[in-house]
Image (cartoon, rainbow, N blue to C red; front, side):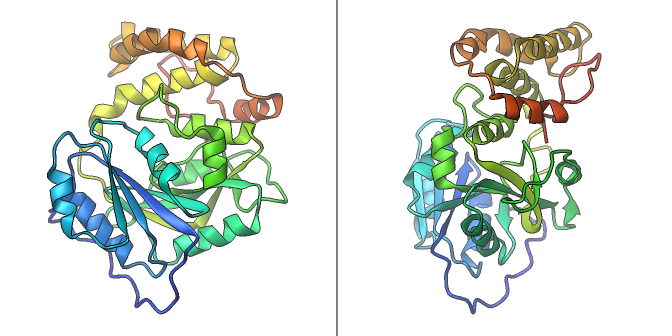
Length: 313
């Protein structure tokens, strides 16, 4: 188990458990991290049931979780399902709301109850994104400021700031909305998959907002996700082919190709994988309705000479 400082102890649990919300966690070959996170979640005042989807290729996580808290349920995918493991967990959940945690992230005490209150009070709210604090230092994740600066206009029937992006380990969804939108898309697998889900929720009439008073904690292992650069580039371009106008998708593909030609890190591999997946993307293409496309255009970054970068807010 990591020697880094763990989270602060949760306050004494005096409130009744909150039966409205389940925590869904995906993991792969990181049993020590899973045990640490389950310990934190079990100490929350909401005492949520937890569904762990194990993407591991061996029995290490199963063995480690034999003494898991009784509220924890383990689903063994028996292959690496990537972000689609979250879809499995949501389908198995029996509560109206589902919060996501990775095996290196968890929720602050009281945040899950607050999120459930917001979703219950705002029937059109499909997903609420939280403020993320990183590491034992609790530093602000840079994406917090991106979400907070979203130019999308506020809506009277929604709390917080409307957005079209979020961090997958720091959000809570309405189960009905998530399933209606189809969950995470199988073509993307993992890496920057959140934007497409935000698009699909908005296209279905659901609100997606950022509420910074909700707090999630993320304690990533140093360098643990350095290999994902090409996935982020690939999935941003594929998302455009799946939902955005063809000129937008073509422009992003051209920038990615230019990055590959000049040796931009990860761009060459990303371009190869975009080309391999492009027929499937075209077959599943479903352009956004005009009002969502207009919102997406407000969030588009200025045209750049390099490859695509981080997706919409």
